[in-house]
Amino acid sequence: MMVGLFFAMYGGILFGIIGWGYILQRRKEKHYVNGFEKVLNEQVAVIIPFRNEKNRLSPLLQSIENATASPMQYIFVDDHSDDGSAPFIMKKTNPSHAVIIELKENEEGKKVAIRRGIEQSSGQWILSMDADISFQRDYFIALSNLEAADMYILPAVMVAKRWYEHLYEVDLILVNAANCGLAGWKRPIMASGANLLYRREAFVRLDHFERHAHMPSGDDIYLLRDFREGAADVRLMTDPALAIHTETPQSFSEFIHQRLRWLAKTGDVKDHLSTALAIIQAALTFAFVALLAAKGVAHDWCSFWLIFGVKTAIDMGLFFPYFRRIGRLKSWFFIPIYEFLFPFYTLLILCMMYWFKPKWKGRKLIRNF
Image 1 (cartoon, one colour):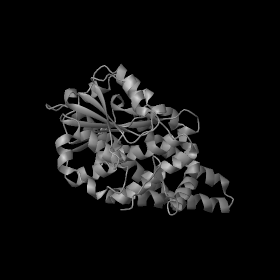
Image 2 (cartoon, rainbow, N blue to C red):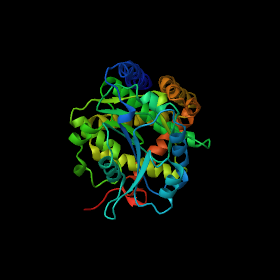
Image 3 (cartoon, rainbow, N blue to C red):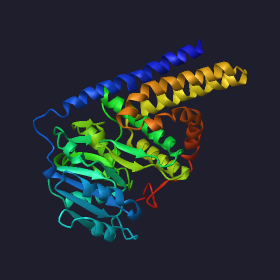
Image 4 (cartoon, rainbow, N blue to C red):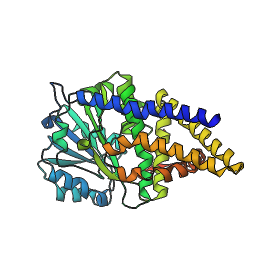
């Protein structure tokens, strides 16, 4: 009885958000390339903040060199690097198309860097990118096909190099798939500053930096909140041609550190839709673990593995279209391992979030003023 009730609730909720929501989102995206007013590359300024990224810059600089179309300008903003990142960029880029500016001594953080870059730029559109990413040759051609809107949340895909890093991929892809489904139904709840396009006029009108200046990072989720509260036209795209790619965290410690930063920022934003989704996920995870624990205590291992197998099959079936869409089917095969580890990972995160203070680029995540 309890098992049937759990799967009815779980399957229904997951199908609604991930399954049908994905279909609705794909329908929306077909209309996003049909408008008369387009995003013109000659009006796009790309802002790339960086801090000690010399060893990770090559894929981005190679992508810039190989691009079949270009924006009006690339603006690199140096956040007090001391590893030679700026000279490396100057050596590898065309000075007539890319400039480097430096933050002042009393300035720091990615959000400040982006705003300084915007001040130094011109053009109608701002595209923020991270320094450790790469993109396809025809990225800017795909960008120029978009209908004008206030903001576009574009795909950011992590790529594993070692087998176990696929588990890090799965964790992010599942969240992004839920974000995609919610965008289909109502609106997205998260964005990635590694690949975020927005209209300059909307940014000037809606940006409320003073509300989140205490966080040196989080340019994406706070800006999304400002745009949402300002009733802006915010859209999400899953088109692989518009995706950027970046490496997964290089260690489990780095992975946990990253997730704790994201959790801290998400909680600080206070998005009711995001909070509701987190509560639903927590309740369903608890129910799933409780069912498995009950079968384990009763030594009913046949039912134990049946419950685990059915849930895994539901997840793999409903998430498959999104994994295929972003070209990460190799990571899709790691879902069963992720399913087994997820309760332990969740418990670890919940324990650490109350005493562990994550840092960003060697700085405290939350400033004290």
